[in-house]
Image 1 (tube, rainbow, N blue to C red):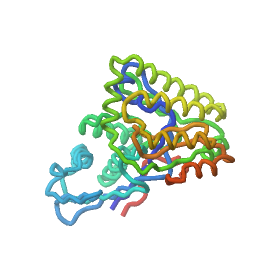
Image 2: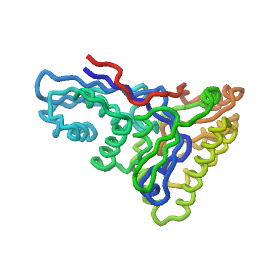
Image 3: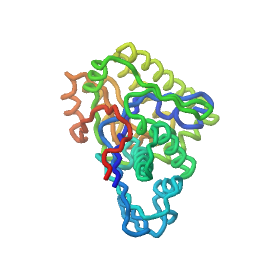
Length: 326
């Protein structure tokens, strides 16, 4: 039996620039961190030669090629595993449509566990590349690459997406006290709304072709991420709140459905109570709201968002890892 633990992520700035429709023209950049909310994947040998997969439902089929779950089927196919295996997964938070990269986190964790099951170590770079291959190329999902790299590498990173499809993960170097202060200022609230990111990302990707206004908005979002990177490396946090707010306003212009009345009302209430800035995490439409709030204003923000569930979290230094082998 093998168990992998893989962190979810939250993205501060630059989200959407990891879509190929943008980065192949301009190059993209995302500022993000792994968090201590994780997806766990268990892989074990099955008594017979069949395949059993348990997630929100349970499948039991004769061969890997018959598995309906597309990510599991393609991962088994990529690694040449045909049967005699059982796979289960659980997550610390709702595992679908929450904006924390859960699908890619699951893919990375599954691949890590399968490689370990086959008796070999897989590097973070290999896990990220294979996850992108499975989700984007094999499953045809209209998504970007940031989630796979955030889950595989872990930590607080500036991730660059180059026009030649290469990806560069740059660890953000600043004082531990700066990261501690940043973490203490972040608040995350669950809207209770889950949604599929695929339709939103497909529309956003299509809008990057020929719509100069939307491309210019993404240019500004990437430039903001670059600017905040330099400030963080100088141990400055005073520009991040304003950058989050500006980028959120720009993001809402990229595709219909990124925001809605519930999200807009909650955002306005938090800002009115003292939040410096914030955003919806992930593609939009639901999931988690993230805010940067001075500590003396946090109780006021909690009161303003009393109808939403606050979800405390911490940063995670590690990426996907194997935590149990028997």
